[in-house]
Amino acid sequence: ISHTEFLFVGFYELKQHRWLLFFPFFLMFMLSSIANSILIFVIKTQRSLHSPMCVLIGAMACVDLSLPVFIVPKMIFSFLFNWDGISLLGCLVQMFFIHFVGSFQSSILLWMSLDRYAAICIPLRYNDYLNISSSLKFVLAAIVRNGTFAVIVDVLAGDLSFCSSNAINHCFCEHMALVGLACGNTIVNNVVGLLAVFCVTTLDCLFMVISYVKIFISVFKTTSGKSFHKAIHTCTTHIIVMCVTYFCAMTAFVSYRIPNSIPPDIRIIISTMYLLFPSCFNPIIYGIRTKEIREQILKLVVCFH
Image (cartoon, rainbow, N blue to C red):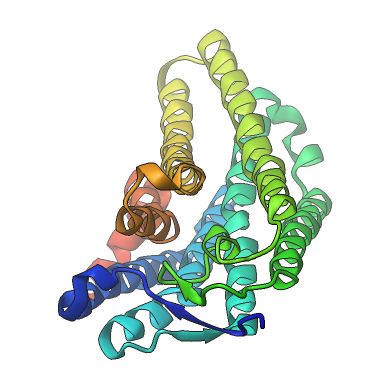
């Protein structure tokens, strides 16, 4: 008999104190929702922020706003009321949206690096490379790539037999946490998971590194004064966001490949922070370090007062 109902048992070692986890995760969820909503509102309503880069920042805010929605409400109600059950179908749906939406963080970061490369290294041909037609092609390619891997990972996980235990040692449907319960051969699932990480996260990161290396070489050779500092400041902002996002992602990925050396609760915190922390951090760093956005936010604050 293969289980079709599962229980989340993450942090159950805390026993009667488990409900206290509601507060930090709820606060992070509210911070993410409010900060990203403000960022989206400011970029949408202020015509001066309708540049390609600000639109990309707005797209990243949309991803950061929606991603926690798929995990946090179910998780915090589980902490409060012990609503730990989930069906296999519900688990697969949650897993699909986590992978599909989360992979767009990498896609948008890559797009930002290509935008900066075109603007700084080949400014005269910027409109030739980054126009509406090119943008639509990039979006379509990202949807097809990210969606294909998310569907394949889900289908393969759904075909497994879960005949030993139905207790998921996590607070949401993480791929390896679910696959780890299977009683059959999971080599294909592991290989496809690694392939998805390589084709999405690793390749995007590689292209980003190449873009920023070329940008810095070009800036140091040809730019000076105010333009130099502006280019460095803009690129540094994106690099900070990129490093935080990829550090959280790779830490979560590695933690499940060396399960015996990391306590289960620590591994759960790592993989949860991979989804939550960038969603809280990104809008703040963009709001503080992007001058145009910061000025518009300050204007709104003054108007409300």
